[in-house]
Image (cartoon, rainbow, N blue to C red; front, side, top):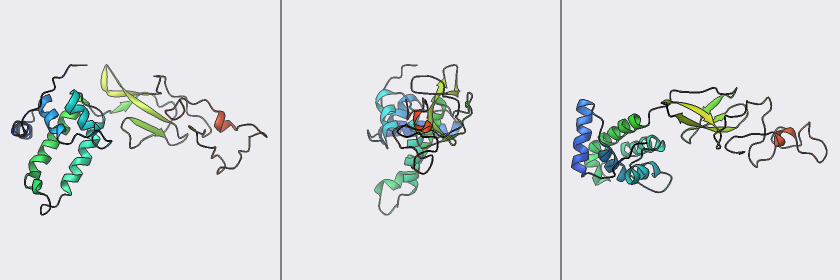
Length: 205
């Protein structure tokens, strides 16, 4: 991973780079990206992507999600209530330039290795997908040789289990195979197969 110097620019310098990107398509510098991110940085869940870029220079997966949310908030501002809205166009332009920067540093994943029989669907957490059939959740890990491709993995780096015929109980939740009632294949005093199934998803491992 490349070493990135953390050095913030002035607002006018960051704006000039964003305007050049808009006119010529030249992606903004690491330092301009860090500057723009610093304005929205927060250690809470709503700004951790911005904070990571502005303080470490590294571009996290979460950044694109944060940019989309922040841009929506900019668009919803009332010019009569916010003095900053007199330059909302510049702020929007700089967020767009930051998004183009993030897309180049962390490209969109266009495909994953074998799904192991799962029918994956993206959720709210970046790079995590849940199977519509069995309910397990695994993460997508980018390939070093091709960052636009990824592999599904458990927390320990293993491949996911093959999607089972049953829908096992994940984590600590009770078996819901029969709406919470004892499962048909459950012997007296014995856990059912849904609770004893070996799973390595993010909830179970």
